[in-house]
Amino acid sequence: MSIDQHAFPVTKTSDSKIKYFDWDHLDFGKNFSDHMFLMEYSDGVWGQGEIVPFANLTMHPAMSAIHYGQSIFEGLKANRTADGRVSIFRPDMNAKRFNESAERMCMPSIPEELFVEAIRQLVSLDDEWVTSREGHSLYIRPFMYATDELVGIRPSRTYKFLIITTPVGQYYSEPVNVKIEKSYTRAASGGVGRAKAAGNYAASMYPALQAQKEGYHQLVWTDAAEHKYIEESGTMNIVFQIGDKLITPDENHDTILRGITKRSVLQVAEMWGVEVEERMVTIKEIVEAARNGSLKDAFGAGTAATIAPIAMIGYEDEKFMLPPVEERMLSNKIKKYLGDLKTGRIEDAFGWNLIV
Ligand code: PLP
Ligand code: COI
Image 1 (cartoon, rainbow, N blue to C red):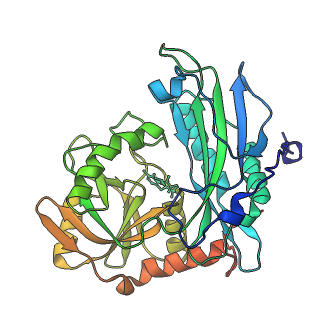
Image 2: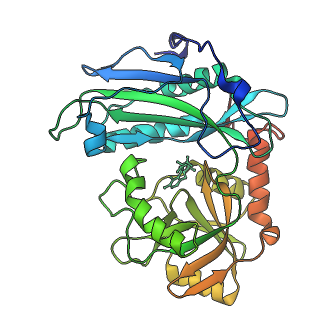
Image 3: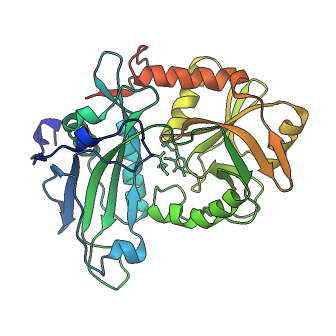
């Protein structure tokens, strides 16, 4: 199927909400643009995708997604470039990951170019919702869920695929305090941790809430078997800088989401000749590095979070403070580079921007 064949039918809203929109009070993910993309799957094929006014959906009380959790999603961003165009960051990567999640959850795949083209056309129509405000973007949320009406357990035979978009600012407004989790588990080997499955987030809420009561913003998950190795954080992957080296848990485990932001961070660092190690990372070595002063930086990497400096790491009864954010030359430089690349202030040397 070539891209030209995906001219999705569009039903435009007669009452754009943009005129009521308060750009000064932007809570992450609470406001939605005027349109959404909708496509339905039945009898083994996807139907005609279309762009329609943003609206509520109806559902059968026995809709299988809400009973058994066959539900996956993606997250990516569109940015306003310095010359007024709109760019979308690495949507092909989200398309691939979406299909990997779909496969693990027994859901149908979506042709990658259709996935990307649907995003492009939706963002193009809701172009005004992409602001040029510093640090702001249009967050794009593709998702798929099972719609069979059945109180029996088997993979659904019908699905809905939607894309909605929401203007956002910073996900974390300050450097984050994270707690290394030793009791609860996000994902075990052989499970669904690598998939961006809705249930992974449901399962992590209770432990995250306990940590929030202790003053933390987020958890750092560790391996399910021994709670000895660092995996990732709640909404982002995690990267450490020990000395001049970037160290991060490798992705050869099916318990870690393969983050697009982290991959981009590492590619930029490697281009600059920074030594990068992707491998098993023990809690012990991070705690030792924090104690002896060689832990120069720790940050989360994610689409919503962008690059989120970690201010403090809590482990058992200890709290390790990290250097002030101004001193973190490497991650600050990477953050600026990626921000400039996405907004067209520097050359897109990697070809990561899809210009709408
Ligand atoms: N890990 C988890 C659990 C996430 O929810 C996210 C956010 O998408 C990430 C990592 C970072 O992935 P990405 O950089 O592709 O957004
Ligand atoms: C993202 O960064 O895209 C995520 O999925 C995190 C989400 C919890 C907002």
